Image (tube, rainbow, N blue to C red; front, top):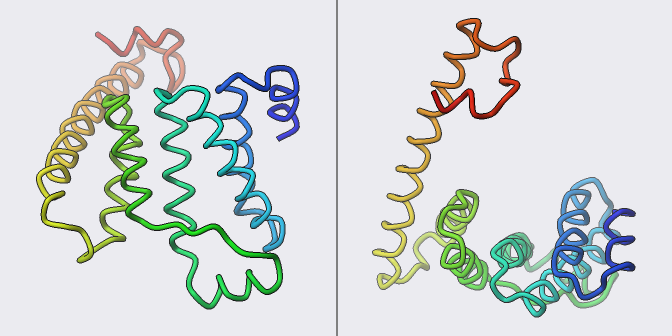
Length: 181
């Protein structure tokens, strides 16, 4: 967190510096208490929105914002009411907003697997509330995810075989190009 703060202090208009703030705070969020996590969730959202404002084509900014919406949408009504009394009002968030952010991230970078995974998790949480109009988009996302996963599994298995057959000294080859054989 301190390194990302320094990066923002040195380059406040750099979207990557803003992204580092959002990601750093997001990584430590599960380790914090209620008051800290509520305050830091506000920082995460503000940083993700700044990333998108500075670079609307940054797929990771859209991804982080989608994760924020996804996590905040899980906060129940009772917990939200208690948080409002003790810590102040929580910003509204829905799974639909999360899905919209992940879809935007996929549109910007369709080769990044984590966007599809989070979109799938979002659709699963939405359950019956998803509209029929999104079904073809969901099916397409899942087909692409399965295809990419199969390719990555095959590549990983090939790399594992080359490593375990004595061509490399450790589990990870010294040169990543060794996995392309």
